[in-house]
View 1 (cartoon, helix red, strand yellow):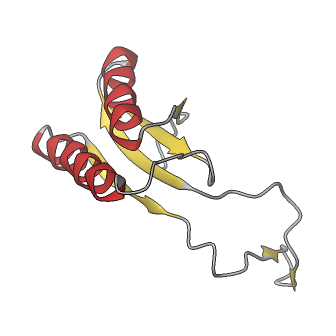
View 2: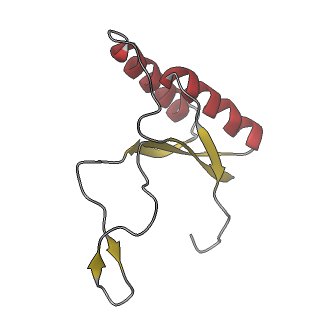
Length: 110
């Protein structure tokens, strides 16, 4: 089976006041459904209160050098891209914003 990441960057969710709890409830339901289907691997949000760093091959630690990776993500494992698109649509509906779907490359060592 193939693993996919479904993600959204920070700031794209535009939820009207008073509707956040419904978004939380809806998104948690999709996660429960993913788990029940055996497709959930893991997910969460990037803690933007913790400054990212770059770690070099020699162990040197410095300021970030890549574009920011922020927001939330869900990793799923499903047999077809069509099923991945289905779950991405469910998450998009729950979060009230479009989601990006990317496929992980297969590596037998990973």
